[in-house]
Length: 168
Image 1: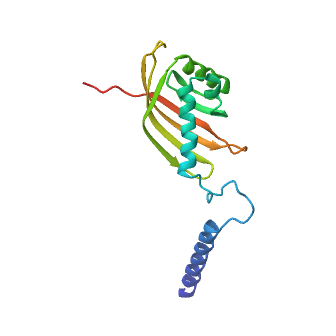
Image 2: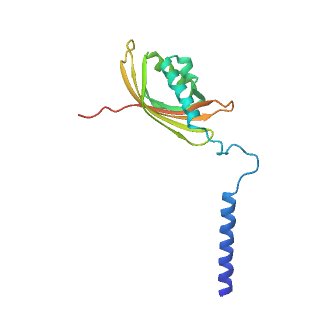
Image 3: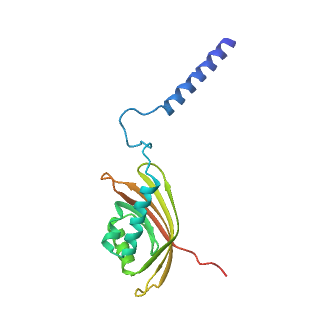
């Protein structure tokens, strides 16, 4: 009886060793899709987000629309439903540009590097307009960037909402 307990214990121990080894082994099959060793640097991510903010400041609908991946999904602050259709997303960006904001100031931001292909940029911005129908707007946005096959980082997911006003 003791011998069968020892065999059973040994079998469980060896199974655990094999399972742990299989889970933690280095990949050597040439698959670079999950290679997290080549992280995007903070400075490279900052270049991407600085260019995005400059593009938003341009109020050029075509340039703004080009920030987003073909399969972008997002919540826009001006439309309640989730946008999963690229043509609808383009229309939402045209609506943003038509608001004619002439000043955009990012007051808070944080970049989170996920791996070599993905990072998140969260920001709070104040926008003002001298000629648009909305004179001031405070937005908070979270943008998820993914590296495309051509090496360019585009937004694949965006969630923007207005900043709640402080209660008196």
